[in-house]
Length: 441
Image (tube, rainbow, N blue to C red; front, side, top):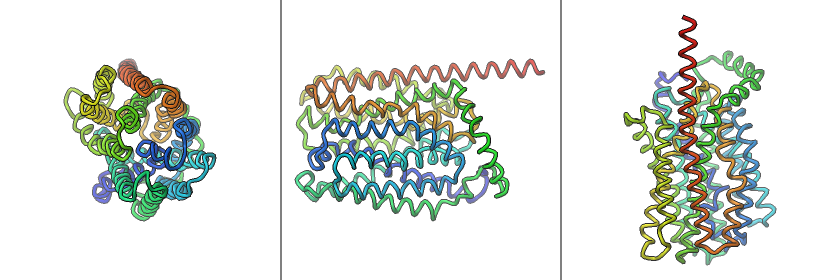
């Protein structure tokens, strides 16, 4: 991309902001359990296990769609794909506002796989990568994550405010308002994306129309070769497992609301407010903090180094959470610790795809790369929610949540080990290149 043009210099942060808002709002629909877990049970009549099955169906189907989405991002205009995604996700929210029976709700969850995973995730990441330079990818992608947090926070804050004002769980129609609010915001995002983001601004190197068409044809013919290059690179898997570890910890922390309700007897509305602070609130500040931390000389603008340090901090944090007794006099400490863990985890996640740059794969294949890394990194969606839902339904609350925190601890250890592997592979590749250059000389 020609970042020297005045138009891109003025617009690129606004483009990233708009795409981030769209991302943040769209994912609130399939992952609505994060903030309205108890409301879905009380008002819409689903069980813990059914909610876990819904997210696991979403995660399982997503595995193939991450890869397909990466290929789509490399072959079609990202602006058009993101627009279709936002409007399609909104239509699913409208259907959910009718409180459909569980099989239909499950089908909508599967439909959202197409609109959010296949048509949104990789195209959005590629927009961020194309609007980055080699020197600032550790800043642009974290800010995309931060703006995603803004979208999630604003949309969910509006929903929680409306939810509480109209009677929360006491009003059987309260969830209808929530679904329709998300649908309205997504419709607006889809229209704005199409009208405001210029597709020509998202072409690399200021290529002419004919050059772009020729490159597209070439990419079609070589797509198998591109995928092969990505799959043959061991660093791709190290980056994928780094994302997987961080995401497992994140998924476990999304049970903060139900943890407060079941272990401390909190009202679901009050617990939802803490959940919003832990999820959307800290995500907003995680992007700027990630960009600030990665610029510290010790990290040398390398996202992987930062992720290793953060994973180590998370390991210590979850060990403390497991040791602390679940008593009322420890509640404030536990809440602060959970919010802190969420903050550092979001910093790690916001840098996760910046780590993908360190695989050494050309940025023009970033759509395919992000698809493969996402397939590995979010594969836990296929099983983690069913497992945790089963624990919640069959075990006493203290034991169930202890198992959840142990699972999060394992994820942090996995992320740290994967980070060390990624650094080792990059050093090995650099050594091989240096030897080859010396031999050629």
